[in-house]
Image 1: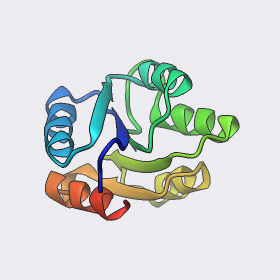
Image 2 (image 1 turned 45 degrees about the vertical axis):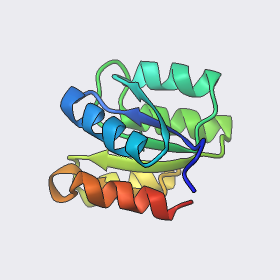
Image 3 (image 1 turned 180 degrees about the horizontal axis):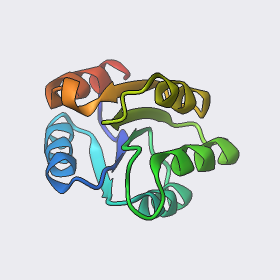
Image 4 (image 1 turned 90 degrees about the horizontal axis):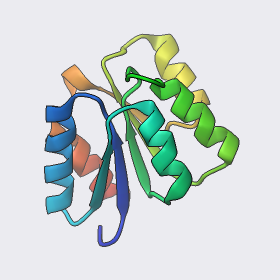
Amino acid sequence: MAKNKKILVAEDEKPLAKALEIKLSKEGFDVLIAANGEEAISMLSSQDFDVLILDLIMPKKDGFVVLEYLKNQNKKIKIIVLSNLAQEEDFKKAKALGAKSYFVKSNTPIVELVNYIKEMF
């Protein structure tokens, strides 16, 4: 099911990024981590991923810049925003830029996110 599906976790909170990597790897996904938006764009430009888990508030370039980059590149990738930004306008902006779904970190257990991703494939 999840075999050979590649996920990029763009998240600057190392413990959360690591936890996602461990849980998703256990489910059979190939997981890479980008610690900031610049790193994420660099990885996205050189490799293909099936899913991007994207934090909106990151150093160097924020998640909205990453979303704009992907929209301009016309890349086919499922984008899941995982952020502490919980404002309606942030949801709308992220969706307009191509995010498939939006989870608020403080309301979303990692297990829920992993199950959501498993259901996508």
